[in-house]
Image 1 (cartoon, rainbow, N blue to C red):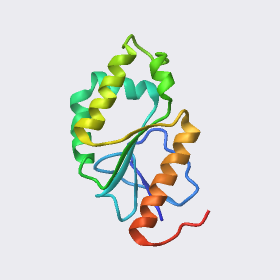
Image 2 (image 1 turned 90 degrees about the horizontal axis):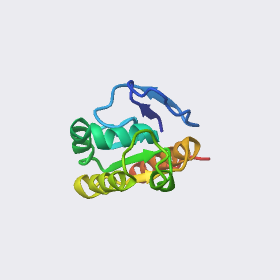
Image 3 (image 1 turned 180 degrees about the vertical axis):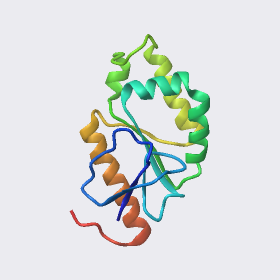
Length: 143
């Protein structure tokens, strides 16, 4: 299994499996050979909040593409507590962020995973991609 990292990803994860970089149609991470059906969008907390509140139209276009994938997810490097306690830049009420988050899930069918921090988000992302790959190919990725 080779993880594909989008060329526009500014702070890519350091995975324990081989990686390659190329432009992805949607998301920041995919799997070689599955780029048209599997993608994960990574977001740091401030970027997530700013994007879902102020850049809804542009992000919505990307989410519309992602919504047709078999594996689709948004991984946020923060916890729901971080949102509820307003630990992000700007004066956006936590309820607005939660409402927009629920809107993404219900409107696009894309799950949002709050992974507490970057390290946990990296582990979750690699595991999710690995499990998808194993189910699609029947190949077991040893760890």
